Length: 344
Image (cartoon, rainbow, N blue to C red; front, top):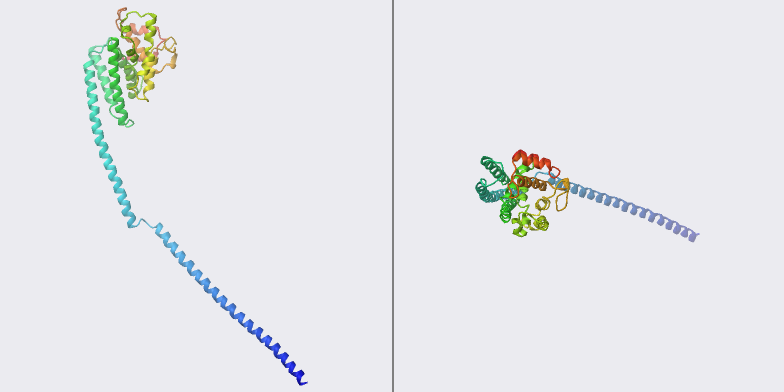
């Protein structure tokens, strides 16, 4: 009995110890959970604190970006603005200096041309113009040339200088052509009539001046022909065929003309013997296949040929000359004939 009781006590003690260890373990687990909760709460508070600090920093950055230019920025801006203004002033003074130099060159060129015009105006033999009318024509030409050199806003100094050189070169060639062919200033007279007709028809001063230049050299191909051909009063068919080649030869002599102006000169040289009715040469063009410059030269040259006294014919007066032009009006541009009659 005693042993049985002892074993029972031992079993009860073992079971009690088991329950007591379970209680301790639960107590330990509880403590660990409480500690974990405390740690989690601390970590959470640290996270909130960091988040708040980052938010404050972002606000400071945004405030800096949105704030007005600081003092350093103002200084840099002032320095850049000062350099920019100084550069503009320097460029302005340089441009004014260049303008004065160039205007001096233009003035010399215009003065030279004016003296040439005044020297020649009494020698220009446009038929049926009085001495006073001839002086008026020369004065008008001088005004147009002066206007060309007035440097309008849309034209650069380089372009104006280019036209100035081209004009002088064309005048020189016009004189050479007339001397070589022993004609009485035909190139100059045709060019002056073309200029005045173009202005009458409403072309701009620049275009009219370009037409004037082209009309000065429309017969430049004659310089490549044998000079004896111009001394022959009556041309044979063979000589006339050689004469007609000047419209082709002249196209190869425009080295002194800028590429952008060359089409006008090529039209003047190659097409000034074309007729509206297709009876002209070299390509038998009709109507408005013939450009304006060629039609204008055709009328001006024909008028001068009619009114000029030749060895094989007498000259006509103004009215008879225009009547003759209108008799062959299928060849000529009527508007150009009317404009020419209005200025003669």
